[in-house]
Image 1 (cartoon, rainbow, N blue to C red):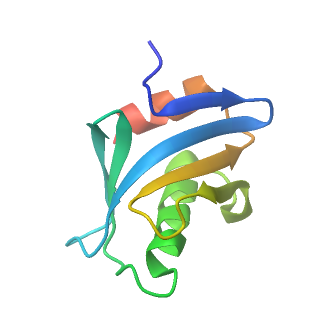
Image 2 (cartoon, helix red, strand yellow; image 1 turned 180 degrees about the vertical axis):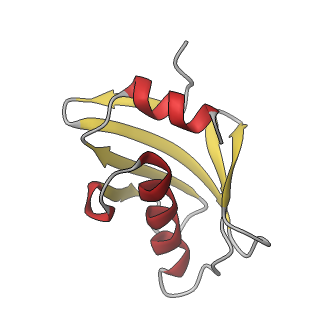
Image 3 (tube, rainbow, N blue to C red; image 1 turned 45 degrees about the horizontal axis):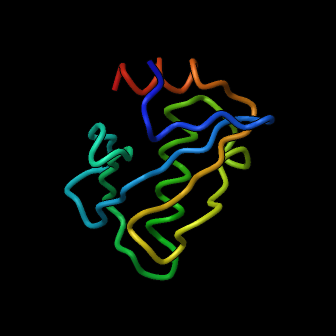
Length: 98
């Protein structure tokens, strides 16, 4: 079953992400309130948390940094992230291992 936070798109997937900045370390925590919860060590200042989120997701999913794009919620804790070149099955499988 596909989690609610993952939506298939023609050229990849879109994730609904809940970000917790200024955590002790950057990591994916799991699902929270229908969104993927991610803790980030970076502060929410001058886009640092957004950059850290994109870097973390690119590393976890094994895609280039340019394939991970923020499409909504730039200044919010609730964000929409598009990841090009991956399928829902790949994303779900990789995030379950975290």
